Image (cartoon, rainbow, N blue to C red; front, side, top):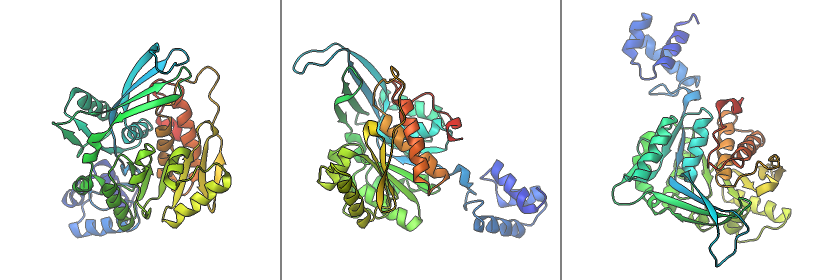
Length: 361
């Protein structure tokens, strides 16, 4: 590292907020010489403007729901219309929040923009994320509403029977909020938005993704909220959803491969660039040119399967983490996503504690 430009880059990496005067003093250069080196580094893509953001440390910004998950798992085959013995688990939840935690446990820089109450649950949820290194600056903390909740009823195998979600607080993540939090999103190349966001807020993100050349990933959360996607899908780099949600979006059961490929073509015509459809234990279908390709899910060892909550969010997080490094390789991204989902299926927690940066190697 002999050149002044390389020495300057090392100083910027150590302190991205260093001033031009301080750089000049450290290297014995004039401010005009420093400015020239910085301009060349920006042109080369080695730094990204003020405050000299390095590409490897660009935050992945997640926007959407945070809530408390309550899971009731039946101890035997459930009987409807009757009381059933069960075991209860509680853990942090919310699609955007879960994705943010997965990404943070993988060692990636993450910023979460969400809405919680100023109650004990909301403050604990934010504190847990911040302890993992997730930046929550700019999130809504409401004094007049409780933190959202998600209650899942699982059968004795851990499969979802019914879920009830109180996510009204996420309606405050509206288009005005999206505009207010522009500074928190300015340095991001990848944005992940869940469909808890109101439709106008999502429309703002789509328009910004087009004008700023950002990658916008939209993750479905439920069948009823599929209507929040507008007619135009321009600006959405990737849509992640399951077969039921895709069927709701298209108004068709999509029972055959031909129907799935027709749906993909219709979504492409609406401006969508890429698609991943989770197909449960069958794995995923992902857009690979003109057709959808299939990828099988890894086998969970016999007796290790716990329950399904959070597996879809782990899938989405793995896909985003891989694309953050190799934006064009959706096949490799799906492989990592399926691996993370398999780990999540083997724990009662919504996010597996076994996630680590080593999984990105």
